[in-house]
Length: 396
Image (cartoon, rainbow, N blue to C red):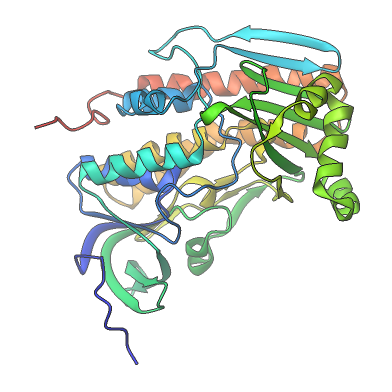
């Protein structure tokens, strides 16, 4: 029997339907709605629900939030301002001060419960419809094969047909939309890491710390509520071999091997929740546009989280895609992918080498210099974007 539940979706036609309301999807929805488009974004999870993340925003990500008028909301949530980043190579530590530039006075690492909610609220304030508890389960096609809308279902599995000029998949690395569209992988890399994440109260380590030793890597990332996210990355073969002994044992073993000092701090701190693990997924660039559709965020491009650049990627690509949609036409969407690929292939390749663990500590330093150059190029592109497009709507 068909459901009689009233749909929270108010129209049968939109300019754009977006699958996924996290960093990439909510940002894209906000930017398109600020251009006056009728935008529907759906997500199976609840607003501001938690998700596995390294949280760290690189300079490009902080710059985007500033340009969009949202950085003050991140600060208002008592997200710590990061003034230093320290790279550790065995016993050697290299501290880098975060210089004020481009209206960025520091870095941030908000919990996803904070950041995703801010982005969803900004999309709503811009006029987008954001509907949680619903997913895109299929696409509608015209006789010529062009995507013309989406089938959307809630928890009761009742399907709603919604017409749209464009359907965007922002539904993560295992994107259902990408599978439905049979979006091909254009480029893949070889290596991945497994990562174990934990949160610790009052750890006492200020700033970002990225710690490397042969066979492992660790990150220490201060976030909201006095918590510090500490992740341990290791080769996936070791993860599979030793996970049966328990995540706790494996996590603390990697911490001790990479940084005995950080391991002692963690052991002296109070855990904030249970450890969680990510077994790893190899990085890729996926074909990210076609007639009536596009992909953004991890749905179209993914790299290993060991370089903690995923959120910054999502915020950057949301704007590249939103600008292409505003420009109109399939050529503009193809240009979005070309620009994205030109920016990220270097990031993907250097991340792949770091994820391989096939380096000594001097080589790890060189990789980070390459990574820095790639991120500076990214910031240069973002800095060149005009301010008018992304200005928040006037408060009336």
